[in-house]
Length: 503
Ligand code: NG1
Ligand code: MG
Image (tube, rainbow, N blue to C red; front, side, top):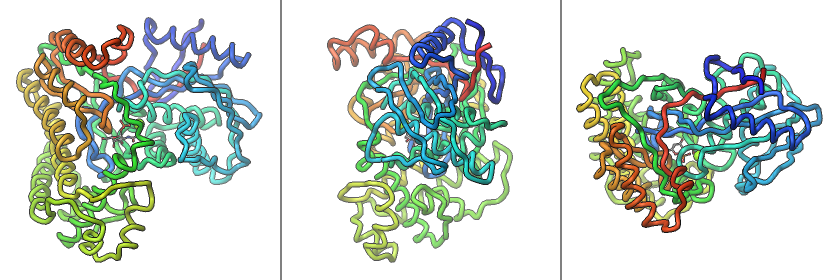
C-alpha cells in the first residue's frame, strides 16, 4: 500500500511503520469491504494520561497531562448524499446511520449513551466553527466513516475525547475547511461533551489535540486557553510512566449526577461562598455560568501582568498557599444543606437551585464545600511544583523523589478530600509503590479507571510483575495474557490530532 502522508498542522508526524501502519492498512481494507469505495483521508486523535492536576481543569487551574500512543483512527469519505454512515471495527459498537438536518445543527439526545452521540458532539462543534468562519448557514456534507480505537473505554484515558476530537477534525476536513488550527480545534472540542450532559473541563481535548512527542503539556485555562510543551528531564535511569487499569469502569455518563457533575457543583458553590466571604466579585466564566475557585484567587489578588515562568510560578505558589489558609478560615468543615448555602449566599432556595442545580443532572444529600476547595487549591499548588521540577531538575534522584511525592500527595487528596478514588485504585498504588514506583496516583476522573506511576525504567518489570500477581490475578482469577497486556501500558508521550491521506 502507498504511504500515509500527514496533512495537518505539524507535518512531520508519521505513524510508526511497524506497529501503526498495519493498523491503518487494515482500516483501509475494511473500509473498502464495507463501502465499496476508498476513503479520502484518515483522522486521528490520541488518548491522554494526566500526570498531575486532577479535577481542577473546570476550576480554571492549569494541569499537566500528556497524549499517549493509544488513539482513535477514522477513515472518511465525503459524499453528496446528506447522511452519515458510521461503522466501527469493534462489533460491540453497531453501525449507525445519521441523517443530517437541513442547515440546522444536529440535535443530541443526552439521555441516551449511544456511541454515535459522541460522534454527533464532534460533528456539532465542527459545524458551529464552519458557520462562524463563513458567517452563514453551512450545509454539511455526508460522510462514510469506519473507525477503530485502542483507548480502553471508561478507563480515564479519555477514549471519549479521542473520539470526539477525531470526529470534529474529520468533519472540518471533509467540509473543505482550509487552515484548521490546533487552537481552533481545542477551543471547539473542549465544550463538545457538554452536549452529552456531562459538565466536563478542557484538559482531555487540549491534550488529545496538542500532544507533543516526549513532552508533557502544561495546559492553562486563564487568562486564555494555552498548551505549552515541556520536555522531560534526562534522568539516570530514564523515566517511564506506567499506566495500570483497575478494570473497574466508571461510565461517566451514568454516574455523573452523583460523581462528576456533583463535584462541578460543589467547587462552583465553593467559589461563590469564598468570593462572598472575601468580598470579591468574580466573572461568570466557569462551567455552570458562574465563577471558579481560580476566579476567586485572581480577583483577590487583582492580578498584575504575566511574569516570567519562574516568577509566575513562585507568585502562584504564594497565592495558592494563602487561598488554602483563607479556605480554612472561612469555610466550615461540615457539609452543607442547600438551605444553609442559600442563606449564606443571600439567595432563596429556588434561586440556589436554578443557579447551581438545574443545568446538569445532580443528586446528593449534602454539599461538601471545604474538602473540595482544599483539594482544588492544594492540587493546583502541586501542579506548579511539578512544573518547576520539570524545568529545573538536574539531579535524577531528586526528580524521582520529589515528583513522585507530589503524585502520592495528589492521590491522597483525591482519595480523602475529593472522594474520587476507590479501593482498587488505592490497592494498585500501594503495590506499585512497594515495588519500585516513586509516585502513584489515579488519572482522569477516578472512581475506577486507570492509575499512573512514575517508575525508573529498570524497575518497570518488577512493578508489572507485582501488579499482575498481587492485583490482577487476585481480583480477576481467569484473566488472560491478552487482557493483561491491555491493562498495563508503558506509553511514551505521543503526538496529538493528525490527518493523513494515502499516496
Ligand atoms: P476522564 O474521566 O478521564 O474523561 C475527566 C474530564 C477532565 C477532567 C478529569 C479530572 C471529561 C471528558 N474529562 O476525565 O476534563 O476534569 O475528569 O481531572 O469529562
Ligand atoms: Mg471521558
